[in-house]
Length: 456
Image (cartoon, rainbow, N blue to C red; front, side):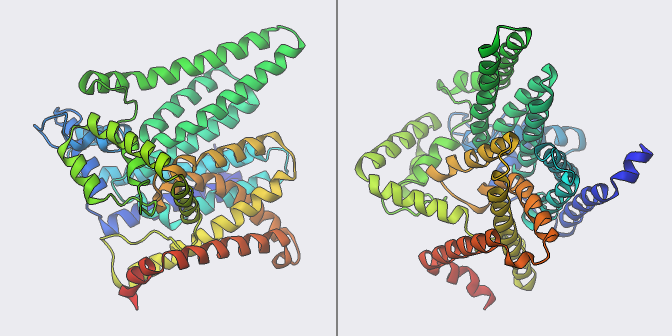
């Protein structure tokens, strides 16, 4: 243990600083739950009190708003804490600070696996861990009663276990990978898009073995794939059965995802999560089975009647998703100079992450290494659900751990060069992301002027 501490002083410092930044931010601002956070808090407390998965105690469960919230894993996570410690937010903040620090550590471990052929892999991992651990948005969100910190931790765990299995092919690793994949999807469904990549990896290796001869390895890979699917199904089964018993509908993730297809795709919309009065009234006046059915019906009608507008909205969502001028920080708990400073720090962090992350992606692809290709597939899959539904700044958090790994690779190699500021990839990324930000600014000028007007 002593040798480990001696060899990993910088890593331990990064993890501890990440934890304490989250810890102190939480206890300094003591942010009270509002909107989504308030809903998660209410559901968690109702579960802890024995009222079940409800947003309002004693409500008609067919019309209760809980099923439209992302979940259910985070709400049960809150319920577990409330059951032990009572209805207090301090234990939640501490648990989330721990998960934030552990996420930075997992990113380090994943980076040294992805770049295992490099003698400098540990330094790459340290840069990646620091970028994620010190990222202002990640610190801020860990101080709120929101799903993102738990979701990021499980996503980092999923990616780490995938690359561990990539090298070791152990049965227990594929079992834990399946369990982590299921839990991450129950925290936020978009991570389910990682599952086809994992199955592709298993199939590819099974096919390679099959070309040679039916061997023990061949049979072992078949068993691994079957076990992965069985555990994944088992994780989803209780929640899916519960929803079907109550709503008579196959809803492995609840009704939130279906509603987003309607919110983000209607004639005259902007692709952001801003429901119209019609959508809000419909949601309030109907059961959630009806809401899910109507949402998907409206989405299909929109595709049929306005295919060109759907393409336009998709372009807008892609533009906003990668925009460097959409920082976090426009929250209710801050105002004045403190909020402005946070907005600046968030914007600077996003500029660094996107430019160096994609710079590292371009540079690392040239290495033609299989682990890098799989990390690229995870990156490509991450925003696909957002591109066809709704975009918000915090919905892009899932891509941050992956970009941090590529950023660590790029930053380390930039600093190795005598004149890093002349690097062609660096300037190409600067041009692309500043141009994308400028397009976003021009298309959404009224919104930016309204939000920044309070500081001018």
